[in-house]
Amino acid sequence: MNKVYGVGINDCSCKTVRYERENGVWKRTGYYKAYSTWVKILRRCYIDNEFHNDVAVSEDWKKFSNFENWYIKNYEEGYEVDKDILGCSIYSSTTCLMIPKWLNNKLRKVRHTETGVWYDKTRHNYQAYCTNFNGVRVSLGRFNSFDDAKLEWAKAKADFIDAVIENNNFKSPVVDGLLKLKNDLLNLNNLNRGSK
Image 1: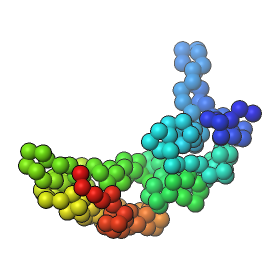
Image 2: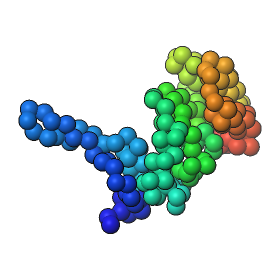
Image 3: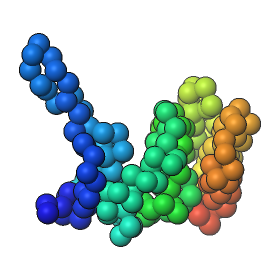
Image 4: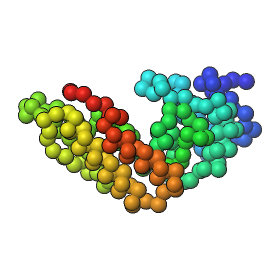
């Protein structure tokens, strides 16, 4: 049996590829959603891992049927598989949640702590900014030190997380993950500190 990206085993008897008839000819039109999600996770971990070399898939999820069972049980339209909200580097049934795609996209910006601070060579100080809940980039001010700018950025991102929780009706594990992310942001020991 051929393995998907050298690690995944497709043990499902279901059709993983979708075909539709167009002008009397059968054409491949896509993949079964659970299968395509599983393949993308495997690719991210084992092929496109130049920037994600610390991520992996649990042994259990290397078998498609196990992933598929979890996916079907947890699937919601417009949601994506996410491991980061729980602070994990392994894709598994105990480390992943389904979260809205829009939230996953916004959290990518929150997780990358270097995004919101830059050094202004002309003014010899640090500028902090962030994107608010409505997607508008907001200046947080200018600071004499990188750490002061980073702290202001972290506070603004924590406020963003509060707004996300307040304006949505998420299930408990998602709220718990967001609160953990907020606490990590506010804990300067977890931020990439240092002068730039």
